[in-house]
Image (cartoon, rainbow, N blue to C red; front, side, top):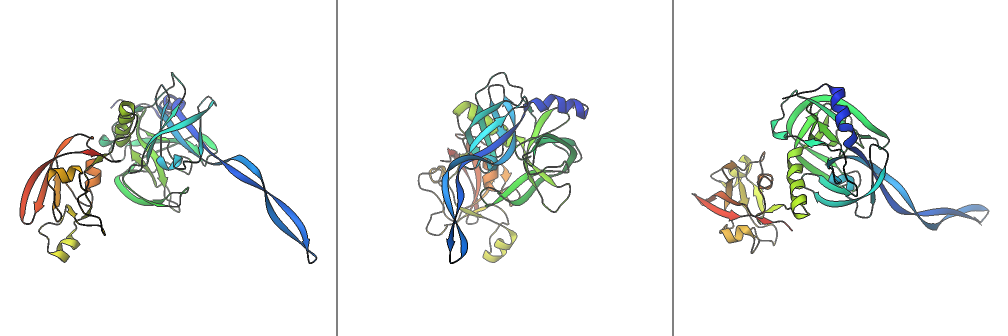
Length: 337
């Protein structure tokens, strides 16, 4: 690993870090007063619409022709306008090309060429204690803020709240760092001392010090590859409904295994979606999928996350428990619509 001094890394990557300004057209009201039994009463009277800044985030350029990586939750509002501010203060409207809600990733496009970029690293090679640098637009106001820390943990799981929608989001396989990550940092790069992005800053734990999280860069690399090739993110699809098998579930229903994905109906919906790849491969209700391409399915490594390692059209081998017999099935992965 060819590591560099921190100021050198910052100097190299900073030109490719952008701010994202979120704006919406909102109705503007004026207070109208009138006397009522000796008191002044007020009514809000609409006076038209005005573009108002409602939030901000960060992102970073990964292609010289204007492709930008950020968080999905930064650009989640379809009625908002997203303006990208480059490091030279130039402002450009952006288009949301694609989003991946599973990994909280979004890819934006601006009309520009010959832009500086941040090279993408390999998040699978991260080590505890490794030095990392977080860069972003802190609190939507302090641009190009740099903080330094280490990788404090790997494969973390948190349940967070989306400040825009109010929805709770479960996020898995995150990088934990003590580099300061604040609101507005979301979407900015977490880089190593090779000047490569190894994560996308995404969350901070309030009322806790030095606890921030970033999405590993490898899922974003796959998403970017899809967008360049197909113009969208292609998410592999098996077509099953299931519950994860745990030791508690094993004991309750006297199951022969304590891991895997048990295919069961969800309300009135069948466990195997008719016509889906799983249906064509011969999977049945009550089957327990134990492995995909020799990778064990568990609470730590659930079925949907293992699937994301493959591409649409890949043929994969499943190890399935049917009754008391283990069988192997080949299935060609489809695309989630």
